[in-house]
Each structure stands twice: as structure tokens, then as C-alpha cells.
Length: 242
Image (cartoon, rainbow, N blue to C red; front, side, top):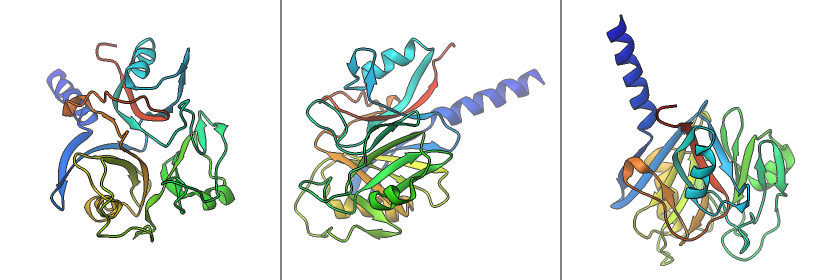
């Protein structure tokens, strides 16, 4: 019996750790990390002394609580002071309001959307979100939407020459799985959207950013170093040995 329990614990621990993988879709390499309903998935913005700005500061803060990051990535566009451009909700409290008007840049390329962490995961078009006001423990607005109810954003062009390292999130139809993806070589919006829709089967997906895109994934050997970033999404797990 004791041996069975040990084996079950080992299998459970392995399953919890195996959250990130590399994959290729249409000859483009990507890194994909998964979160599942019931996971301790959170958004992070400010620490004890101001904006976290990166994964190391989040790790330091979590370590004091006996916790660590399983994986993490930047989770929405931000201003020079690292504050969110659009809606940001943390622990049920709205820190910045939703933006529903169009505007310059990718964020203003409507429809944009909101990634919501509630009883399940959701990616919701921003104006629909503002009307329906779903309950989110955490939420981050970004844009543009990549996939909307199974269709690509109408502004995307297959022959676009705007190529960047991009990252974003897609959610399964049942809301039980969220996929966090970063391209490992430059892609345009059309290719990136197809990865979520056709490669992962996400009916709704949201663009987080490009150029400053970062992923912390120790099981893939990715430390996530680089530019300072604003909102961060991360899977929180018990620290080994605690």
C-alpha cells in the first residue's frame, strides 16, 4: 500500500509539473503552457515596493509565502509606468477601467478583449464584457482579439509582412483549459490566430503583445529575462520542500 501511495504521489507531481511544451504549427515553432480549471492561476502587477516589472520580483514575493511560479508570461499591454492600458482586475478589485473605444495601435484594433479568470477561464470581446459584467477574480484587457467565436479577427491578412515574436492566450470551448503561447520565431497575426484556432482548437483567443513578449518556463529552460513588463499571468504552485 505504501508503495502504491508513493507511485500515485509521483505521478500526480509529474502531471502538475508537465505544463509547458514546444510545438510546431505550419512550420513555425511555438512554446505552449497550459492551465486547467482549479489551478491557482493569478495576475500580478504591483509588489510591496511598486510594479513587479518581471518574473524575478514575483518569484521573490511568492517565495516568502512558500510558493513559486510554475510558468508565467506578460499578460496585456501597458504604459511607460507599467500600468495597464485597459481593464485590470486583481483579487476581484478593478484597478483600471475597461476601454471600449477604438484607437491607435494593436490595442485599439477592435474588437479587442478581456482574459478572465473566474470559476472557469474565458476570453470575451471587450464591449460584450462591459455589457455582461462577468464575475472575474482576475482579468486583463488586451488586443486585438485573435479568434472570435471560431473566426479570425476580420482585419488580419494572410500576406501581412508585419512579423514579430508574439504571445497570447486561448481558452477551450468548455472554459476548463487556457493555453498561453509565445512564438519562437516572428509571425504575423494571421499565422498566430490560426495556431490558436486550428492548432489548439481555441474558439476564442486574445493577443497579449509583441516585441516585448516574454515567457518564464523553467521546464523549457526559459528564464523570461528582458524588458520590464506590466501585467503578468502566472501559475502559482507550492515551493519544493514546503
